[in-house]
Length: 192
Image (cartoon, rainbow, N blue to C red):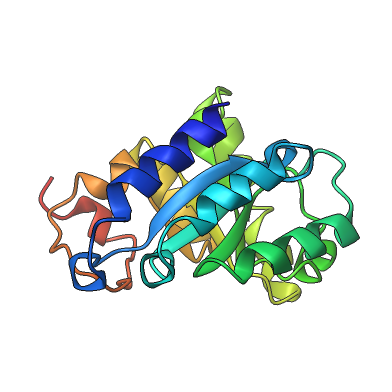
């Protein structure tokens, strides 16, 4: 039900807009279970109700991919979704490092949500070191979201993640631009 509400909110907010008004990519998080059961058809129909010119500014983030999801099922799903939106990414568990399998699913990028990880920060930082390196070996790009502290942001950059976001990144003294910007460890300390 939550996935449907989020999609409705995005559709209602974006549909009346002209592409010139859309300067960013809007990510819609959706649980894998929503996209595989009986709820898939109405969810996809609602996504298709968003005008195609607007859907070019929409990306789908599939949540809960790590929970025993088959490669073939994921590939089929990603291909179906990619025909409707700009990109499809997969949110994994931090300990899921089978990137060979994820590369073959045609996901644009895979990543983790640190914000939902309630473990002590030092444990998270230790685990961050084991995620990007194997991904790069298999040609998979990575992201980390929900970075809540400077130490988590610094560890994420140092470990080699390609993209990151969260309060620790957003609170800096940056110039907001529409295109992705190179962001280094010194950037998180600007303006603090």
